[in-house]
Every structure is written in C-alpha cells, then in structure tokens.
Figure 1 (cartoon, protein in one colour):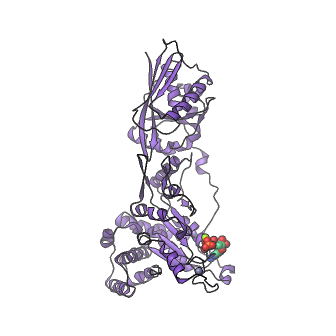
Figure 2 (figure 1 turned 90 degrees about the vertical axis):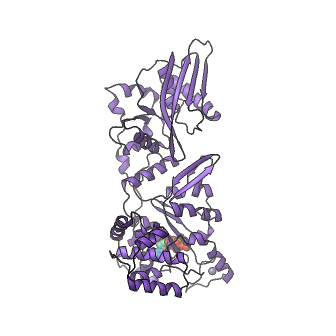
Figure 3 (figure 1 turned 30 degrees about the vertical axis):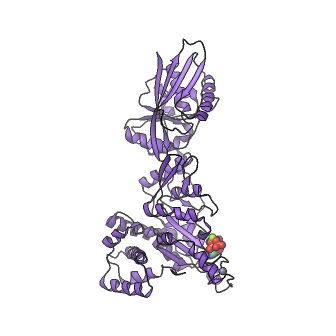
Length: 503
Ligand SMILES: Nc1ncnc2c1ncn2[C@@H]1O[C@H](COP(=O)(O)OP(=O)(O)OP(=O)(O)O)[C@@H](O)[C@H]1O
Ligand SMILES: [Mg+2]
Ligand SMILES: [Zn+2]
C-alpha cells in the first residue's frame, strides 16, 4: 500500500486547528490523476499546480497513477497556502522517494513552482500553541520564518528549509544541525527614530497627565488647537510605559504574526495611529479573512486616534467592547474570531471644527451649535471610559525657544514602572482597568479626602461614573506618590483631569 500521513495545522481567528494530510497512491491506475480533497476549490487548483511542479523541480518524480490527498477533518474550513509543503512531503513519503519517521513533526510552508519554500503568516502562533499541546513536537517551517522559533523551549526542535530538496537533510544526522532554527541578529535589530519626552518644551500639565495615564493605563483625551503638540505628546507615551513582560511580548508577536508579518518580534509597546478615514474592518478587525485590526495591533500599547470626532460613528461605537473587556470578537461568514485588544486609548481633537475655540490668539469662527455637535460625537459610553481629559494650550514662543533641558522619558518611565508594580501587587491589574466593584474594594480614601470628594461631586454635578473616574485617577496619583491612602491632595489633582464634561 502506498499511503502516508503528515501532521500540519492552520490558524482560524486566534485559534490553532490541527489537521492530518493523508496521501494515497494507486499506481496500478493507468491514468495520471492528482486529486486534493478537504480544501476550498480555488485553493486546491493553485496548490495542485505548485506541488506538481515543485516536486519535479526538486530532483524528485511526481508518482504515476492515482494520487489522492485528503486534508482531514474535511469539515474544517481551512485557510492558508501553507499545506503545500506537508502535501509534497506526504507524496514523497507515499511514493517511497523518501523514507523517514515523521510522526512527531508538524510541517508548514508554501511552495513555489521551482521548489522554493516561502514564508507564511501565523507561524509564531502555530509553534507556540502546538508546542504547548505536545511537549516534544518537532517542526519543519520555511527558513523565512526562522526568527519566530525564538520563544520555544529547547526540547522543541525546529528545522528551517528554503527548498523542497532540503527535506532529506533534516533526517540526515550529519547534516541536520545546519537546518536547525537559530534566531539571529535580526531579533536585536533596531532602527527606529529616537523620540523622547525631553523633546517637548514646557507643557508640564499635559506631561503630568500623560505620566498619570501611563502609570495607571488610563485612557486619555487631549483637546487643543492645531500645532499645540497633541500628536507629539501621544507619540511619546510608549516611551514612558513599563517594559513589556515576556508574556506580553509573546502575545503581541502572535497578533502581528497572524496579521501577516514574518519575523516581527514585538518587544516595544506598539503605537498605532490609524487615519480617521480608515475602514471599520481595518481598525476593529474583520474583512474577508477575519484579520486582526489596529486595535489588536495596539494590544499592550497605545491606540492613537487623532481628530477623534472625525472617525466613523460605527468605529467609535465598536470600541466599547474592547475598552471594557480588552478583547474584540469579530464574526463574519460563520467564522468567529476573538483577538486580544487591551490598549491605552489616546484620543486627540481640536476643540471645535475650525480648531480655535478657546485659543487666545485666534478667533473661533464656529457657531455655538457647531461646537456642541462636534464635541457630542464622542458618545457617553465612550467618554465614560476615558479617565483623563485635558486641554493642551499652545506653548508660548519663549518657552519653545529656551534651552532649558526637559526631563527624559527614562526618568518618567522609572516612576511609571514603580507605580505600576504597586498596583499589580495590590490588585493584579492597573487602576485604569478596575471595574466598579474593584474600585470600591481597592480604593481607600482617608476621611478628609472622602469629604472633599463628596463636596466636589456636588459642586460639579458629577455622575456616578464621573466619580469613579476621579477615584481611579486619584488612586494612580497616590501610587505615584507611594501613598497607601488617597488624600485630599491626590483627589484635588485628579479633579483637574475631568475635562469640560458639559461641553
Ligand atoms: N511643546 C513643544 N515643544 C517643542 N515643539 C513643539 C511643542 N509644541 C509644538 N511643537 C512643534 O509643533 C509641531 C506641531 O505639533 P503637533 O503636530 O504635535 O501638534 P498637534 O496639536 O497635533 O496639531 P494638529 O491639531 O494640527 O494635529 C511639532 O512637530 C513640533 O515641532
Ligand atoms: Mg496632530
Ligand atoms: Zn471654531
């Protein structure tokens, strides 16, 4: 009997599904037939073509007779082009052109007509999930994905090949070492532009707000006229956020991997700034292939929405679930995908359509109704989830020109790290993510502070949610001061970040 089975897997949403590639060859048949079953039709035709040519162009023969390939289980909706390699290996095994024990191996890779193996998205996720399920799983993957083997334990052997003909070397004890994945220098490569908080002159109020937002992972809204430096501040927030943990690095890298990046290891907190004209699918996720969107690419980092009121209403509304739960669920054509989306929302906007409302140097040409409508676009439920709202005035020219040296991101980050650790120790999450119940449980005010908050709430006619926001921000300010209790000083500072709630 000429039969073989090869293990493979694919990514569906944020999940890994394993499959078995079975190959059966009936060489008594006089006709040459090559059939693949268990894949969508269009994908089959293309895969057939590539596999047929690749085998012949790699020093092997395509077997005569009736060749049937089955991808089991057949009811799974399979995605991706990376079954080419396991199919080819299966055919070579079934036709006895190679003869190895491949039971422990998972194989992925797209093949070119000439036998070249091409990189594919999703490898990080595939490797990590399968290695977790099977402690001794081994892998054969495209050389182009080599860096993605980085996070695996040492007992998981990963081999990388760049041409189908190399498959024989992996089972050759003398040669196989050369094909073992060895994450190299690419991992350490860094050529990003250097930006730093010290680039920003003055703006001490906005900088302090950014520091508090970073320390408690609070969402932040900045209002200010054109050129006041909102974008400049937003871009620098990732530089003061705590270093990513290993778990965060892995999780973010998985997302970028299934999004389509090869070998992109996310070690720095992401900063994503989609344009307001971007489609809902590109921001939230979805589209025909249910890919993760910008909000998931921003996971563990900053999602910057500049000119916030200009975003589509359905985009703004779709932010509610992720802001609440840190995940996003996308359903489309029976495929339901859930992706992580725990980001810090940094929104910026002008105070009015013309941009100059409240600016002492320019006249605002908007009507009062225009101003109100513009600010109303951010609905209650979204506004409720933004703890810190500030106005950013334009910096004065002599402040801009002085050569006083401003505090560096490194110095601010140190305080942020310290305050974050206190929060994790106390409640295992950051203040910005506390639920209403947790606010009650973890935020303790001293007596005077309690009194002060009550008076303030009355004077400002604050809602329950508004009070919760002030409480959370006060707690972060107290944590920055390493104070067990929240005091009047902390609460009164927190009041300054409420924004003009009624406009
Ligand atoms: N405090 C500051 N220190 C140094 N440079 C500044 C400061 N504020 C503004 N600038 C300069 O002004 C430019 C414009 O700032 P930025 O783009 O951040 O403004 P903005 O508030 O985002 O404006 P817009 O509403 O037009 O988007 C910056 O690139 C920077 O060169
Ligand atoms: Mg801007
Ligand atoms: Zn205006």
